[in-house]
Structure formats: structure tokens, C-alpha cells
Image 1 (cartoon, rainbow, N blue to C red):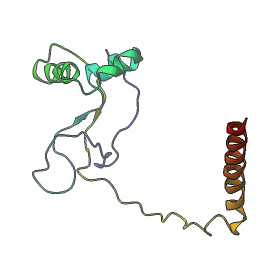
Image 2 (image 1 turned 120 degrees about the vertical axis):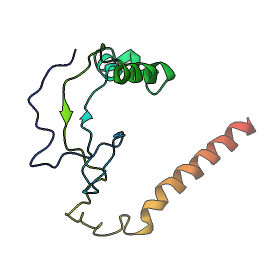
Image 3 (image 1 turned 180 degrees about the vertical axis):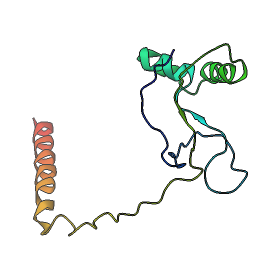
Length: 129
């Protein structure tokens, strides 16, 4: 069903963090002991037929994913991360702080106030007629 992409999902025993990984880490080294299957049957179908996204996380899609796991007759993607991480990796690069608060002078407030005043004046003038 799925094609092999040649993507290396892990390098030197360290893979990626997957938020939907449901494996375990018995030795406590932070790397999952069960390979993570990159794509299940429903994800493959949804990728080829975008309208199926409506059923994402529905009982039907979960049943299909469960059937794929339980019965190896249904073959999905053959892409695996053999060393999935149990926790996300903290960023080692600090993001730059916002240099200055935008806005500067309070003149920016005068534009919406002027528009509001104009709208009220036009509405009042329209009611007098």
C-alpha cells in the first residue's frame, strides 16, 4: 500500500519524537523499545482522498487502525522509526526575544477611534431623516 521513501527515520539509535507513539521504554534510556509505524491504513487513505479527513479520529478510522495492528493481513506503510523518542527534544537554540513592543506612540489608537466616531455620526445623521 505505502511506498518505501528511503527516508532515514532514525540515526545512530536516536529517532524522532512522535506524539501518538504508544510503545514503551523498559530500559529507561528515553528511546522506545517498539518501532513506530509511520502511517496506518486510514492515514494512507486520507492522504489519497482528502474528503476522508472528515472521519479523522472517528470510531471508523480508529477501528481500521486497530484492525491493521491486530490482523497483519491488512498491510499499510512499510516505513518505521526503529528508535522513537519517548519525550520531545528540548530546543537547544533560544528564540530571539521581541526587540521592542510594537506600537510606539499612541497615535495608532487615533485611527480606530476616528472610524468609530465617524460611524456613530453617520448613523445618527441617518436616523434624523
